[in-house]
Length: 233
Image 1: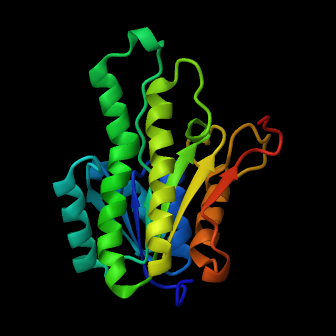
Image 2: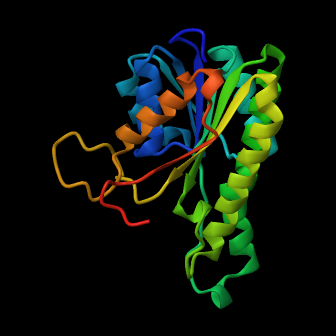
């Protein structure tokens, strides 16, 4: 469990949906939050909702140098990371026989390789302190490979395996590693008005990420799946 409601969070792979909701949630709890995406300018509008606790960084999670530079900058600007979320992804949706090798490789790099690089760098900075939380965003494709979705399932299955392996290796050393299966479509941004539950509200998902970070180590969750109450599974 984190020692207090302060600290530093890093969210890699931020857009206006879940990534932005995670940033707002962590900032609301008093954390200093680093938002990272390939294009920094897209993050600037999100900082306004974080009450001065957010900072934006450009980072391609599939590039080792970018990720190393991100963590170096965060440690310099905000402090040592207590919570790191890998929320990036990559996919190609088309019939198997039409998928080009380059397309498949790019999707795997975005969904899985980036998770490894970010997770490894997070572990490197957290292990000396013997504490920290590393969370990975999964999907239905993490456990179920649909037709015309090989280019997504391969990456997400791999990311899930990575999270399991990291949890078993790093848990006894004080690091909480968990994988969140988001089983359904996420709203492109949080819904603030009442309406039908046709997709998952990213603010509601962010609540679960915060709960995972605050869990007591006597009862850590390694994996949790989230879905709409009417979702078939």
